Length: 339
Image (cartoon, rainbow, N blue to C red; front, side, top):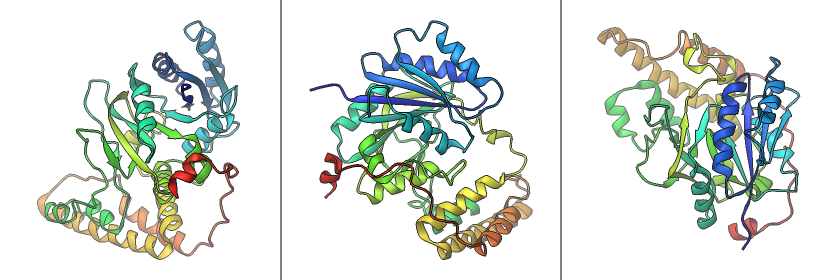
């Protein structure tokens, strides 16, 4: 039986040195696998593309099938990864696509662990790694799908509500063993190409955030699971390209992505109800803050910005149908398996 064919997509935005470090770790994890890597510069406009080309040519990548390409425009996380996925391998279509953040560094066996898992679990379409910080502390990357009740729970931050809705809480903590989850953060995720052919690539309406949630939901609706693979280890710094840790105010694209996720997958009425539930929870939290003198937990003006954004979005005309990101493929073994 031949080795599965793997494509690694590494997306860069203005972090060329860190991206090259991630590429070196990925190259070590590729050893013994039938794998190629494509580094996509997401239109950084700061010399990143040239720096990546020079870095790959410097010598460490000799013998590693690796290309550096330019996206042409910065359409966000999903669009940038789509550029790499569409570029494909130099010798044809892969069996699996692995996306890796530019600030994520897989252990030497991390890719093999994910690949072996999907090879032996045909019910799973996606598999993601255990993610930890540079000092070893675990990161929460396993989640449930957002719902009306999770909006209330997350905004209220109140023990009795959280206990009552514990099966609705979006973050699942850090699983101690390999298990099924609803969705995973996309810092280190292996995906079946045949499933992507069936459900499409990332929805490019999302600039940042909720794109992995949407993709995993589409996979679930097609009958395939997402698995968290505990023994695939990847170190991750986090928020280097997005600057999320230093936000003084939540950017509009986050609100756009949240609204698009709910309206696309559940309809406008549900999206409006989700915002009302968040407003209810957020109001309860702010009342507790006043009484108990708790420090703020949201960026400045978050609740007001959310309500203003979603009220405006509620009465905007519906956007046109998003363009297809990949034409439907011919019937594959994964399609037959789902029936």
